[in-house]
Length: 186
Length: 170
Image 1 (cartoon, rainbow over the protein chains, first blue to last red):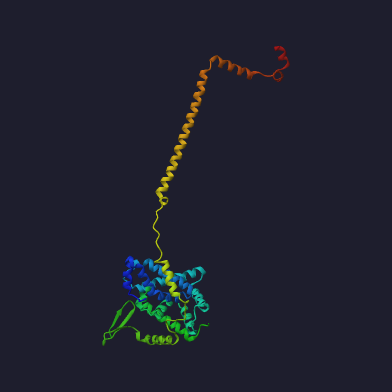
Image 2 (cartoon, rainbow over the protein chains, first blue to last red):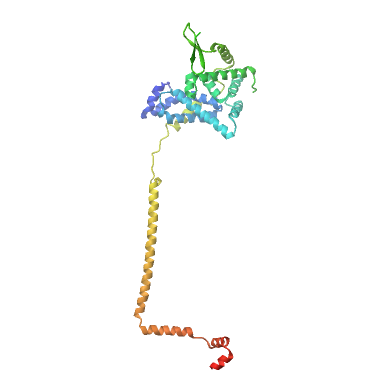
């Protein structure tokens, strides 16, 4: 299916007759990107599956209220990020553990996952990323893997561009340190 | 070189030659940042793969499942049930109380009336009976209550009077 412009999606969605078609176009355009963004945060495929569905259900319910002062893409990303963070917080509360311990559990999950067939370097990288604080991890993923611009990330997270640049730089240094020192065992 | 403030914390060194502005210390950290990116690039795989995988045909089924929970959900028509409205409940309760109280009131009134009728009918019955007959009946009743056995009388006298008294009165 040919990908359409966000403006066209929003226009079709505003008309009752073409609302469903607009949503299908939106899904086709964004579902994979949003899935991978969520997957890199929650690690487990089944968890990512739940969160991505919740994300697009919220998009469906709230798209009529979307104001064009932000980009559609960053708006969807914001919902996905918030849903992921909510999921991770629930894990934390459910298991009565700190967020750092959640990251440790995610790292263990990655090691044991049948849905991860990356090579040694990829596994090492993912574990290095999981050692970062949550927000830094989100920023790193969006900048490195999703190749988003700083002002787009700023729209998603509500953080200044300057702070984002600093955070990304620190994240890169930490990951570099881990990868070069070979601190992780797997 | 003139110095200008830019933002809350950054100090800008203005370059007279080109007019471009850069944050203070920018070039000091630039080299280390580029080196970090290069180091990462040596280690990092293609960004798209990142090692994670999904089941076959996952995204086709994902789209179907999401659509089933969104566009294909038919909103049920809003039903407003009569009994869910508060005023209906309160009005029903009030009617019930009113009817019950009315019923009890009239039942009590009826009982009182019935009792009055019974009294009246008894009195009227007496009016139909001859006065002499009533007097004879009353005297017979009194007599009946006074009749005692001789043995009981004798015992009474023995218990309550001395022999001398009895002898004197005989």
